Image (tube, rainbow, N blue to C red; front, side, top):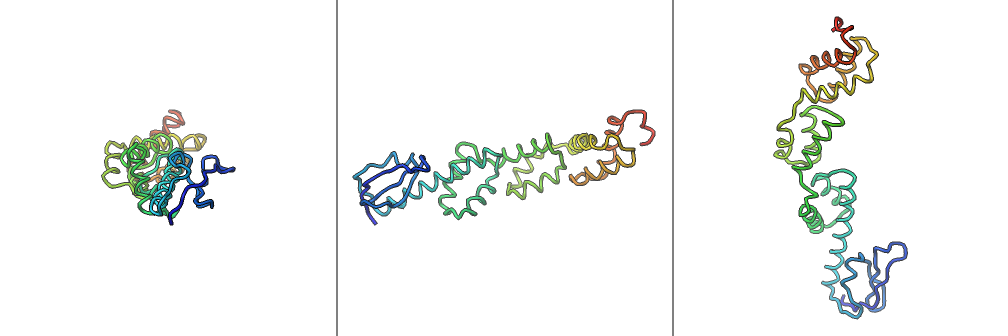
Length: 214
């Protein structure tokens, strides 16, 4: 239904939103940014109003996506899934994701590499487990393979074992081997890698005086 804009009133509880009145009656609200382009007295067709509402919805969910990304990087699949859960129309979803790609805030290759680097730095695990994690986040196979191309499972296992060793530094060899070995197993490392890494970290952590126990 066509209508003439008769008033534009900022919302009292959200100053970033503006209430739009057509022919003297409240009809909808839009962002302040979009409202700046409106003029009182202008006639808007039904199609123009529909397009304006869609642009507003796009702006709302673009900003929500930015907030999600500010907490931690997200894969495109994660963001798409979020928008779908909010029942955002597919065209709006596409526009939001396109805008994020344009400013390099959505890039699955970068996301995968960042994920791997952060895991190695703070919570080391096997390349197999990392691959599984990234697949669950909808990252394409090519991006996963590129991110893990130079990944060193032995070095990752060593870092993980160093972190775990702090908990059991007062243990004897048998308990240390069992505890740290189980820890590495839960992080996806294979036994052939676990055994020598645990022995190495034991010697470095407990000291040469107990080396004969290994």
